[in-house]
Image (tube, rainbow, N blue to C red):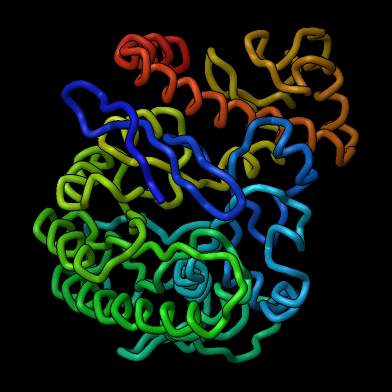
Length: 396
């Protein structure tokens, strides 16, 4: 399933190929997020044209709407959304727990030095309750009651039919105490074992379906011993690859990814969950992450923020009103080839939906191309120079 090609000198970074029933993924690779079987405001065909090799969708959201059984009947996630390439689905654990605590995109990291094991957003009701068997939660859409267990997560993801799926895990925050981190890690390990058993049962039962690779998820917050323990204990379970999850402070990202990847086998792919800023991608690649997903590029595009070689900026400011240059003159995306900052500024000022579409196309292409360039730089031995030049220009 995974072949390593080139190793980054003096580091854990590498290039490789992940083989799936719907095509190969050349790594390292940025995987855009299509939360509800769509990258918001962009056609799947456009995602293919801008160079995306695979897309990731969210099991939690697709379970609630339209229902995993409907996607199964349609022929699987790729067929349902008219995406011809490989697909990933996460386990649903992040959404169950983050939305269940009243947070939308992430769990609050504010004042994480104050430990609190019952994290909840101010003024919100707790919608998710964890026990050793699974999680009971209320839908953030209509308040209906549901339950996810490792077995149910596997059943949902098998119906969704993605090429790469993830074991159900408990997401913790930086606010949780050390004792709770240990408790959650033991629970995640137990759930991983149950996921493997159920995945194998479903694979045998659902004959004729394309093979699905199962990735275990490494948690452990920012504790070295817990991260290494989690990684090493997942290896014997026979996962096809591994996800690196959990809340991580930006300044500790490289260190934690390195701890984990020093424990994981070199012949299995590693996916870093929810990371997508350019400097974070360089850090992750250096320390051995192969693929990454993040909603960031599409989310910020919808609020008129765009990436360029010289940094991220807002297209909706007065300076763009009479600027007839592209977002980034060095970008090869469709948007930069055909539209000016002045036009995009006009679209956002008049609340025209196509503004979000054009900026999303650009941002996704920027991230996909950036990681493609990292892969080429590893292959030709210029990664360090490429990194230094990009970070100097982008962040000043």
